Length: 215
Image (cartoon, rainbow, N blue to C red):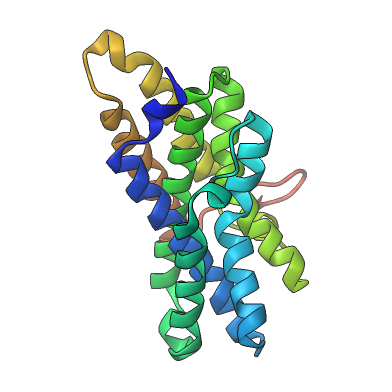
């Protein structure tokens, strides 16, 4: 597979959706903290591109938002949306579900892109996890609050599920006579379903020496 092979309309849409949803989560956090628009824009950009930037640096790809001017526009556009709308619009579980969709979409994109750049299966799956989770980690660290991966809920696990299914599906697709898009769709659906279930029923993994906890 060549790097260009990953550039398909489906993954392009997953990319934009993931960027927008993560950027919005960063901007909304800044709004909750009563920050200026400059800070809001910074949070949107860092959250939206953080995971993808780390992924591209690790796999030796051009950093995606440097070569695509629309990415920064999307991030700043979501910051504008957050600036001109009440914070209450973005509270509650509905926004958590949207963030879960972005998490699954970004995990699929990260894994598929890593495979396209010749990364072996296991590291490629880990690139999906990094793509989906690192932006939120950076957001939380900059905001001075506990990271989402330290909270008592499944978050990293749904990203890992989407990433693993994406890699396994893309490797199996040629022998099964299926397009890669089938693997991407299944991986996204399963990861999003797991994250949604975790939000709905507050699922968590057992922690070391204690009850169910995080990730």
